[in-house]
Image (cartoon, rainbow, N blue to C red; front, side, top):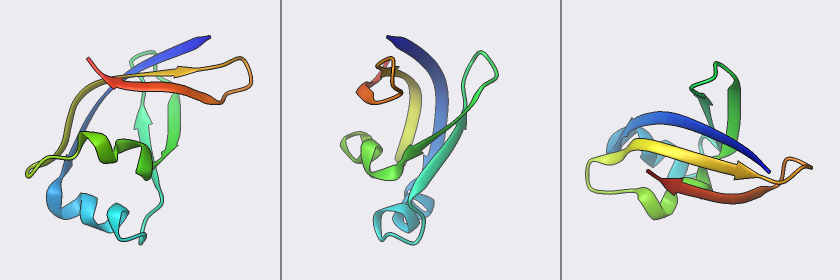
Length: 72
């Protein structure tokens, strides 16, 4: 398993573009410097009235398939 940690701060207004399908992927920079692209739909459980913010951990299997995305 591979773990990536990153911080994310997307306003509610900006996340509406993702929610409506105008943008499908969120691109973040992990703490180790890697650039990671994730489907925006994976962040829906974390959306609040102010958007999506916090520190997250992404867990992938050896093939790069999402196992877990959680807020730390």
